[in-house]
Image (cartoon, rainbow, N blue to C red; front, side, top):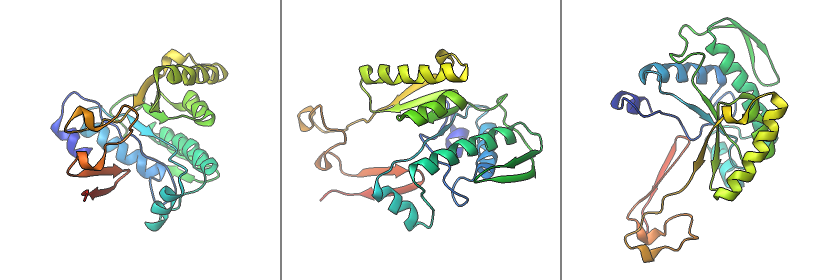
Amino acid sequence: MAALATLTTRIRLGPAVTYILDTAYRHPSLLAQLATSLDWLSGGRLDLRLGLGTSAPEAAATWRNHGIDYPDAAERLERLREGLRVVMALWSGKPVEFSGRFYALRGAQLTATPLQRPHPPIWVAAMGDRMLALAAELAEGWEASYLTPAAFAEKLKHLAKHCQTTGREVGQIRRSVEVDVVVVLKPTEVDATTRFSRPRSLAILLNVVNGFSSTATPA
């Protein structure tokens, strides 16, 4: 993303999405510093987009294989909420005293604050009710994934209810939908219900997930 920031001038940049998992991966203090640098490199075009992560056992195993803890969904959500508060406090530029369940800061202060004021927009990828509540509480943007227009409208109703609880207007929160693009050689090679491309349709399938990259060449 830092490379893209130096090669572009207008598009906004943001991970879709990154996590706050433990002290080994995306500690909120380090995340605040990295995001600040990227905001300056891009001339104020950063959107910080964060998510909860999947609960699939194979995903958890992948993280743990790399020596990174992958707590259950409830703990990941609380780490995300607490981590976001730390990031936002550090972005203020003032010394931060913070004592939470997962993170403790003692007079921590960034030597530089983001170019965007009061801070880069925060997006939360949310599909479940608890994450929608977090988006209504702390985010400027909400990202959904793989939803039909009707399903998106239903999720939006739930977000609006949570916004009422937090005293916000749902219209204040920007929205996006993540979709897949299926690349094929001929339109007849894939049907409308296929989420990912068939292996024979591509010479190489590139998968990049939160910094871990792999390539697979179909037989």
